[in-house]
Length: 497
Image (cartoon, rainbow, N blue to C red; front, side, top):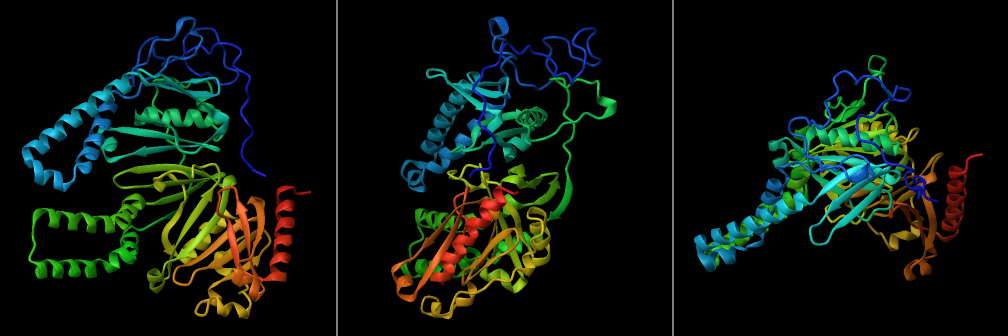
């Protein structure tokens, strides 16, 4: 029941793809060179050095290396990891001099390895595949079919911003993780390669304007600015900061600090290791809200045809494109401390993106980091036309569920609407999940031992993303009727007559 793209063709290209400019359809293939074309063998300033074309041109265009500054950035990242890995106790045992020497040696080794890795890493496009080559002793070649390409994300960490570089991360349908991260390329090269890959994958339409109809897309030309689309909303950074102060971690931190200070005063121990360990633990407590602020800084949302364009980030900027056709669910969450200001956040579940990423920042699930109900209603209507978040009347479970939920029975609810199935749950943190019928993959009726005694059951509507929605603790007869209705509606939505 997946709605993903068709499987890639297994027929290899019939012949070599000669290097050179990409001509528009109908353009002549003979004659004088195009105006402004670079002479053969020339490269624009700052472009990554290409590898020589293979003998006979059998592999098409020459392989490209990453930017020459890539080993420096990788070495700097390794230095941060090394320093973080060496604990405070190591510093106190060996002293600052030996500690600095250990860091320098390990950082130098990491930089040398980064240079060797860069020298043996290359990429190029062959037909409808992106091929990435890497490895010195053990060579590895990854061929990524562009038919399965879901999106290409442009990421710029802080060091990349300072050096004018960017990283490309590819999301492939069914992939277990982000594929072939190309780190790092020049910003212009990254933007140009991103548009080319998406164009070959059929994710964007690149119709030339009349005045440029006869122009070629040159390898060294500066990329045109991507259409920003129709702006939908920009989150105020002040609201983002306040929202993260209204989290349990930030709210309870003063109490934790007071407890630690009392412990130190009572025990009379102010050793360097004890103080450093305490500060490290406090930093770990604040890591999540601080990371959310940094990730969602300057959050902007725009609509561009059938996609959403998301721009966000302070120390690491991101430009993501979310295809609306693959949105599985929309989740609206009201944290307890946010209710005093009437705030909520919206999250997406998108099929085809890697769910096994340890770093969930790579997932394009941000729809609204913080906002009020009217703003959320407007955004939900853009993603799911005809659905109004502020007008969802849901029916609560039967009265006998008070034995299971004595304080929050009416916090649960479910409802069937024209295009979507909606559920509500949560006592302290309220959550509403909206699932289009066309995205439902399976329907399950689950009954626990206590539910059997009370004549209750829960109905699960599963999606390709793996979570879906759950109508908790419904009457048993109602649960079976709801499951049958959901199955029928899902079939009709996927197979309209």
